[in-house]
Amino acid sequence: MVHDMNWIGDLADPPTIFGWFPLKGRRIIGRNPSPERKAASIVGIRFHRCGPNPEHGILIDNMRSFNFDGWVTAMAAEDATVGGGAIGVSSFQPEHRPSANVTVKARMTNSANFGVQYGNVSGGTVQVFAENCMREVIGIEPYCLGHFDFSQADVEGDSITLPGHGLQAGHPLIYGRMTAAGVEGLPIANYWFVIVVDQDTIRLAASEADAAASRQVRLGDIPAGAHRLFTCGITQDIRVLPSTINNLNPPIERFINDADGVLVFTATSGGYARNVDTGTIRISDFSNRAPGYCVSWLGLWGLTLSGLDIRGGRVGGIRVGRGKLNGLRNSAGASIDPLVATMLIPRGTVEGNIVRDFPKRGITVVEGNVMVKSNRIASGSIGAVGITAMHEGAQLTGNTATVGRGSPVQARKSGK
Image 1 (spheres, rainbow, N blue to C red):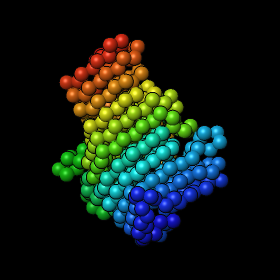
Image 2 (image 1 turned 135 degrees about the vertical axis):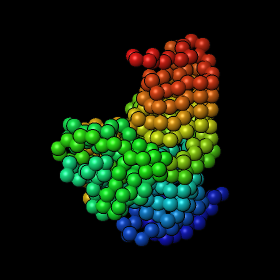
Image 3 (image 1 turned 180 degrees about the vertical axis):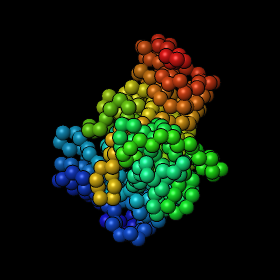
Image 4 (image 1 turned 90 degrees about the horizontal axis):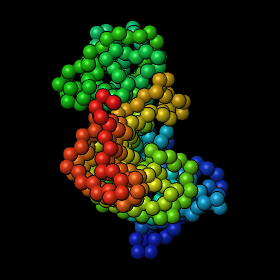
């Protein structure tokens, strides 16, 4: 497990630490369950994952600082699969206790399930140089930290009683239905932001700006039964430094679907992102075993995807769509998922990217209030579509799409 430590190898000739994995779900370096935050630095060391079930390299949380400048590699099993991932910080349950001041510069091969994933991390950078890595080579995936349940009896006017809530003003929450009918005024495709009335009472605002101005949403009918507010973990103040990902022959991996991505920015684990700079990332992905898209953005608000240079993708370049909450757990490991499917609809911008050589779709907005502007898109594939705007919230301006044997734009008409 991780401790306060400073490991120094050699960036020119790194020593190798082998992790032999006869069983699934193991780590070379794992979390420390102590409530005391740790500080660690690992420089100039290679972590190599091998064995019948090559699993996680480093999976830690609750760090006051973490610096990594080294390698995480893996050898595929006999059936060509690689499970687990390379480096996860404050990701997954129970490793999602928040961390701060995290800098990772990782050279990776065969990272499989994830490469470098930041969950509830505040402040830091990430940079990868990846060969034949699979999905979520860079992942921003903040996690739910818990929940509050309330009922009719806990609501007076627009105020909700949550005894000893401990929430800060402006903190993001997600409303999830535990019965078929929901609270009037709280659609389940939104984040909500805390207005603190007192230590036992809150109101909800529709935006961070509204919370700062104490402009609450108006609550209507409160159906009988339990209602649930999820406390979002937050990924914030993260900068992606110039990175490259080349996928020509990645390993087989179990979690691939057409909505997935080589890069993943997702709200599906019940978290919120603030001030995430995607930086300059070059992706070449020409493997039919890869995820559907080079970049998958699911549900998060306030994201701007810019500076990407993308080639290939099994389906295409960038996909923007709703994020369905799933796999949420409390500190004891028990499921706390809402009983009614809860989808978050993304808001933000896709701007100034280069997307080329895709087989089917360049930039696709399945759902979302998203501005798509000043992107350069090109493909020679038969039937390819430059920009697909399936949702009325998508706004297109200043894009250049050169698709000689397909369609530059396919857009859903208003009202259809």
